[in-house]
Length: 355
Image (cartoon, rainbow, N blue to C red; front, side):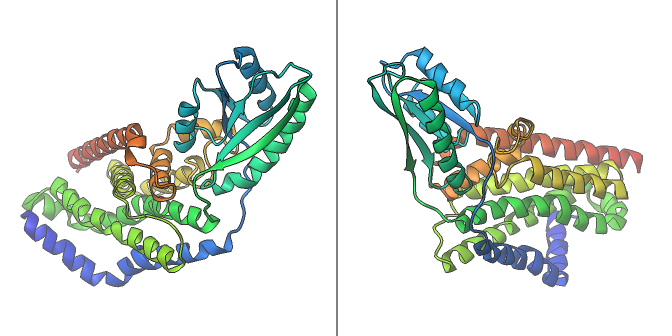
């Protein structure tokens, strides 16, 4: 069986299942995008922050003192320059920057600590106001100087709807990868024997990826269309955002299919994929950034390639940051995709060996 005939088979399948494909790839993202207008606020609990000196006169002891004070409500990290702190902010390594002035121990000094946050990080807007007030009280009690805390913002203001739509593409990609395509392949397992004689399972899967990966652009287009209709400022079709989405789809689909081949399409495979699906939702921090809830979830999120895919997609489509800012994140996604495809290939070999 040639690749051309396999492509013809896939196109026939798409025609016969057009209603289901239309619902999954077009209706679901439309409903999700439209429903985001009902969300108006979010209040997470904990965030990593950056501590940086205002100028060279600030001492290490002063930075450490502010770090100690802020540790009561956040996970502080000292940065050596404002530029590095800003870079970390845009990459969601931290969610606020505290710029520390010199003279905390001077009783006659009138000082201002500037707290900088991104306006695009909507879930952090309300917590940042609370954190500013907490820090103001704590530094007032801890240091002789008269210290105030001023909240400043960078970036462009975004609504919670815009923020959630930017999440939607990755969220639904996870669903398609772990639930939809593995089910499609499972339904075709009865013809595997004939395909192995006339062609190969590897070629079949290659054609599956070649057909379904471009189809993942349909939800992206739907999200962008809904955003345009609602007059939301998003660029879901930015090349970097699209690449991050497609890499996520290919890698997670390879994992989901690999699991099914490994367990020979038994029910356990579906249960494992459902577990992976909900585990990804729970621990990859697709909506709330890493560190908002617990140190454990932050650690797990930093081990999840899906978390980095979300950071890339949000940074490019919502914050309008250049893709080069996330070059190392793309490297993580590519490496994970290669490893996932290798896992799938080995699972297919094992499946054929046991057949």
